[in-house]
Image 1: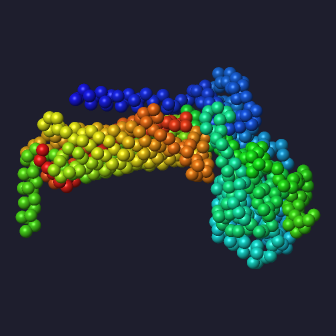
Image 2 (image 1 turned 180 degrees about the vertical axis):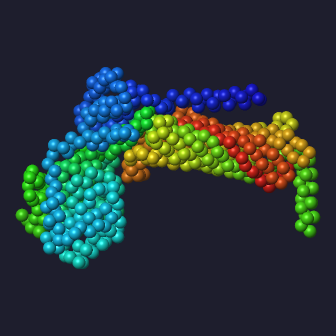
Image 3 (image 1 turned 135 degrees about the vertical axis):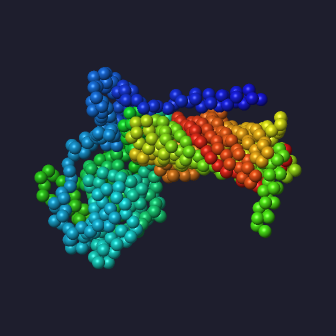
Length: 339
Length: 265
């Protein structure tokens, strides 16, 4: 009997030990970390095919340079250069001493924002409610809400008081929601805010996820529904204009995608920055973290939103322009909708 | 009066243990402290290690007052782990627990030795949070397993007290578990409920779920209470959807067992 017990215990221990090879231990070797980074993206990044990137060739191009790496800074720079090939603002390498980022997606586009003109146009100083800054313009005819980050939360009380300011103290004809330069944040806030402008449940997009390591292994699309039941206030019958520019990224991009389906909303401005892939994270053996687009998102027509969303009315601000032509177009759209 | 009652109680207790006895009903409460290591590929490829704290509660009795062959056990085991990656750049906090019901056949092949064999229905759940991940900072485990359960108890009786050595181990046989697809966010699972459950629930057996969870204790059976010290080892592995999970824990424990009923061997 004793022998039997000993054999059973040894069998259980061996059974567990055989799985140790699935675990990656700490390793600061440049080659190991470079390979780990390449492999994580190879298995999990979602836009290789859509962007027509030959990831094997990228490895062949960059891996010979590993032998010349002398310190962690050079290793970081080499890795950052490699992942910059993806041209994705959601791909970042985080080390204790630096964070890599890709900025090409907005660098070569017009700013489409004029802060000086904006401030001169306000009826009064901006008030703050949660993540919103708000006031009226055009002598109280139009409500103006600036939402600078979808990382900043808001509550029903915030929206209720803004509503009272717009519709009781003033008598606004429409509301401008300015999300220009909003780099994103929480998809939850995007969903919650956009729900305020819908009368009924609407399919506003789709998402898929990788089901396997191959580049084109994706699940069937899941509907993204914007549901007025999630709304903190009902503004579905208000005339709404959303202002966009190239710096609208990630969750803001998602907000624009949803608002394009809202019944009384018009999106005016520049094409958004994109960032249609929901990012996830993994870490390298040396502890650095890699963030990458993992879950591709689509608009209501099942089109990728990674490279941006075209507004309903495309307007740009010319370089050196004094006016904010996007704001002026939005005012016109509310006060003179037939023009 | 109180003094008389106390003396009578002590005499009765000593008499009970002067004969060869086994515990008929036990309610065991133990606290654990030890080391835990986990791998959760949904959160990270790295193995996280650190301190674990735990609470184990077991209730044991026989089904039939006149039969000491078949016993039941109800247990709940809780663990908290504070775990660091090998490069000390991120942390996972783990909170999890097992709740189960077991039945054992008991037999006494030789004097003072009791062997147990049976099965258990075990529900395991855990929540892990990784401090710096983006959009995948949480990972949850839910499993329902039919476990094989084996145990042994050896008892040494002395004049006024007894010493027992207990070992009990469980190992999963078949069941079901929750594992998201490799690139799937919890946000998407939530959006697509209940249809998404098809892809995240898995049948488990030896091909994708293995492990052993054991507990060894030395019990000091005193007249009115049993105190024990021991160690637990837990080694679990499962995989699905190209994602691997691993828990390894070794901890020491101290505890108390309240014997609500005692029978003679």
